[in-house]
Length: 291
Image (cartoon, rainbow, N blue to C red; front, side, top):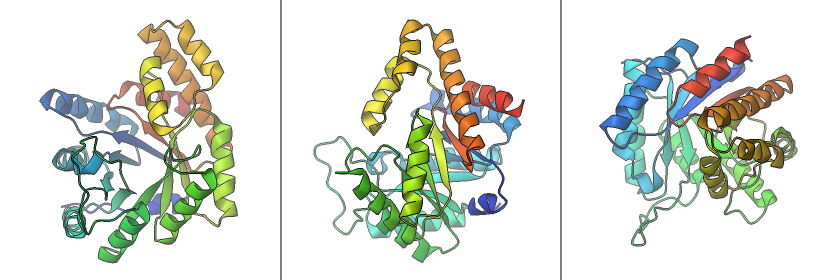
């Protein structure tokens, strides 16, 4: 069994950290898609990959299966997501112990969204916030390296950006090692967010999260869910493409490429790509950034 190195070591080397995010497949066809994408992405050697976790732990087993595939079959350093909503403390400790025993040393630590099931009931002794999960995991296994989420445009459920930043500080003070941001399309938002974090003595690395646009309809749905805004200039370009997939992809990649170039030039420690289990955009961006 191989034991992953903590992601925090990458930041200590002051290198550009490149990471990718997958989601757990729902069926065997999607599992094959994940397998093919992971195989193609080996050539660009991302520093780590993450795998998401469904609301209320609904993808627990699929997330574990996908994490094992990415780690054992492809040799990636894998950061599984873990949410506390819907789990008891005993369940969270059990999941943490299993991940640790399997050689995982990095976890994306999240509160998580409530399931859409109207009959859902949270565990009586469960945790309410990601900061509590950070503290639980650090107490259970101090050698875990923990990532947490940051929201340059505010979490949709936070009353104000200031309140959201205060919550982020609680996560970092509890032991979080780095922050990965929600997707955004205007770099000025990231720069402002970093500045506001530093003003609150939040001094861990902050990785910008980037999603290459593949469909205007899809990206509008994502941004509505997470509270991010689409710049008018980008929307105009995408609407002019009239949903021609090839043209939309070119526009989306060009926008993401420009974003990443600017972010790195202005001191971002790296970038995290939300790739929707597709290799093509990540490969294209890696090729352009290597030039």
